[in-house]
Amino acid sequence: MKGFDKMRLKTLRSLYLLAAVIFVACSGMKPTVFVNKQYNFNFLEKVAVVPFENLSTDQGAGVRITHIFLTELLAAESFDIAEPGEVSKVTQKYIGSGGSSLTRDQITEIGKTLGVQGIILGSVNETSGSRAGGSATTEVTIDARMVETETGQTVWSATNTEGGRSFWASLFGTGDRSEAETARKCVQRVIHTLVK
Image (tube, rainbow, N blue to C red; front, side):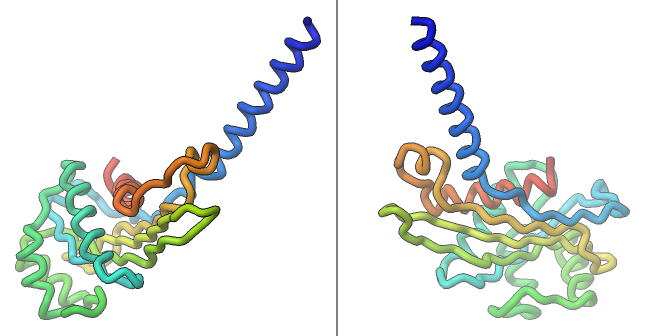
């Protein structure tokens, strides 16, 4: 009986170790982050979020990610946020519908017009749904950066990818996260690199 208990304990330990390895492998990568250590983020009272540029094949991805980003940033309660309609109106003459490249002078002018100290620019690089083992998976990649309006310098930047099969889906064959859940998780991880 003792030999059987030892074997059972050894098997349980092996299963726990295997589950831990699978969890680490499926938990994803950490965001890549740049923070200007000389910049005093206490100076930021109000920021503007420019509509995210869509570099994916999903036509609505830019709009969806921008809305999620705004909601999550508001929920963080770290900055006042310029009204999205006003931001679109002011930035439309500079960036139109293509790209999020702004010159230093344009950034300064937008900052003065909107009364913001920072402008957040971003892009959705990839959203995809693919089949892996008979189930759909979603992957979302977001790049975001904040530019300080007085100098036009980037003071924060982050890139994150979320998606693939979740831990539970990989281990037990259960359903994967929806595209909305994956996008929200991706945005949350990016924002948490800016506001703690």
